[in-house]
Amino acid sequence: MPSCVLAYSGGLDTSVILGWLQDEGYEVHAVYVDLGQPCEDRQAILEKAKTCGAKTSRIVDGQEEMCRDFAFPIAQWQAKYESIYLLGTSIARPLISKICLQVAREVGADAYVHGATGKGNDQCRFQLAAEALDPSVKIIAPWRMEKFRTLFPGRNAMIKYCEEKNIPVKASMAKPYSSDENCLHISYEAGNLEDLMVNGVEAVDFGMTVSPQEAPDQVENVKITFEKGVPVTVNGEKCSPLEVVLKLNEIGGRNGVGRIDMVENRFVGMKSRGVYESPGMTVLYDALLVLEQLTVDRDLIHLRDQLAPVVAEMVYYGFWYAPKMDALLAFGKEAMKHVTGEVSLNLYKGNIMVDGRSSKNSLYDEGIATMEGGGSYDQTDAEGFLRIQGLPSRVQGRVTPRAY
Image (cartoon, rainbow, N blue to C red; front, side, top):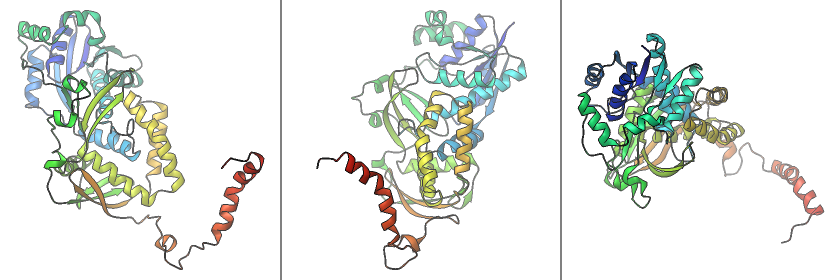
């Protein structure tokens, strides 16, 4: 009997897929990758998978790895897809594929199964990661198979199938939108959010943040210490990568930080509308940027900023395990080697304001930068500097004069 590993959540879609795979003759190993998504009872999900016929079921906690090896390196790039999205869902998918393939190797499974639709980005992220790690892997994506879609044209057909198979699911009316959550963020899309005239931040019942209007009327200060671009303490308390994210989620969330509403370009070609909240990572991006301004050479940071959209695009599209990404991550680590110090931020009603910053590696020299008299910078030197910089323009101006 062929076997497969199923990326399993216990929800309606993966519950149906678990049953359908067995109907297709597969022995199924269910893997719940814990990335901080909300769940009433993870143990109950394991038992449900077994009860519904899974050969094995297990939970694998990937939260620390996701924060340490995926989210933090991308934050060091200040990478934002299309200038705004912090890639919370995109970052998680290659890790899910990696963990599922590790289980597949352990149990000797023949295929890897995911429940992503054929319209979205996640199918790309799951598959491109899996094929890079195991070029011979067999991918089963039921939503891309006509026979599966014929059997399950809608939610009612899926609920009926579960009833017939005695698969326990919550057969309630769908929310007016769908959501996806991990410890980095929550995304909201589809349903009434497909109407661009619907106010996204008013339509969504946010899970990690209060609205700026409802945030406290006083400023809250937060201090973050970094070592080589990696956050290591929050308000003086040493933290693991996951603890940093969770603490900043709590602090940023109660101050209304990190909500966005955007129309983005999916990898498959269509535009889609998404509403996101990423309180902790938003604070982290800002804090890291403040420290970079102090400690990183001008030309290096400008080059990093030119390449940051490339990194964001690769993560969004799903090319995490690619030679170009390997090289870019190595570049990012090198660029951060002097980014050590502390940043103090004030949070107030959705705003993040710099309170102070310090670093033993600071390149800021008050004696050079001061606008007062004296100091170690001789302004006379600027005369020759500007004559040389202006030379090409003077020559061009004589040859092809500009009208003015």
